[in-house]
Image (cartoon, rainbow, N blue to C red; front, side, top):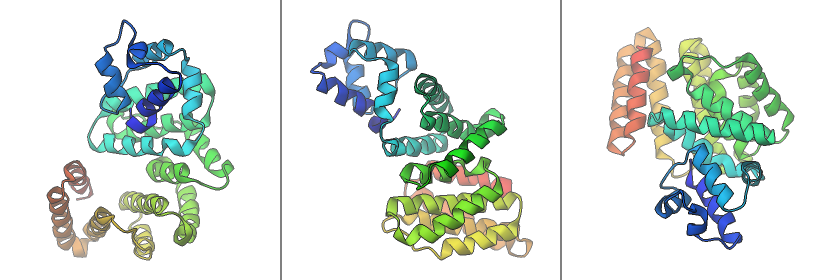
Length: 282
């Protein structure tokens, strides 16, 4: 999982209890693995996690409660989930989903259930399984009931937008756009990504909707230091042109240019992803 999300928290708890890496490893786990896990250089299976938790005198239920006290601590996990999809780490995502499901069963903390649904939504194109209506309802109810959104809700919304009803998406996008000038730049990025994903949805359904939301996207000031978002904005413009038969050639040329630029700045997986997207759009 992520170094911030699991390994680092495990390390903090171990040190607070005055335990060494050797204590955590016990007789069944290599000390070097514990070090790598704590520093985010190695993922961990559920069975091994339960084993090393036992070695530091903690149950899985206690540990899952500990890491869910502030849901904004889970924001790095959501980022990692998105990165894993671009990198085609599907088995890693399935293992993570299994762990989150176990945490949900142990604690009934809604955040874990939301993470399970999010990962399943990301894997729909890979596993060919649709999200259950009851799970979609769970997300819609959560977003409504939670009241004032924090970083976690904004990022969750931006990533799970593809399975939500259009009326729900548009309602929350309009609210987010109104709040945009007053929210933190890290949250602004999630709003921009949600808009991008809404435009992508329109490519399959209603191109006029796509144009409408693209104009909304243009109206927002871009957070400093986020050059790749400018590239993605131009990619979307190119895709909208491709769907417009009169501008198709211009659109293809623009998208190909931006994909080339993504490769030049080292965003190779993202470039590959958009190559696949353009083949579907065309």
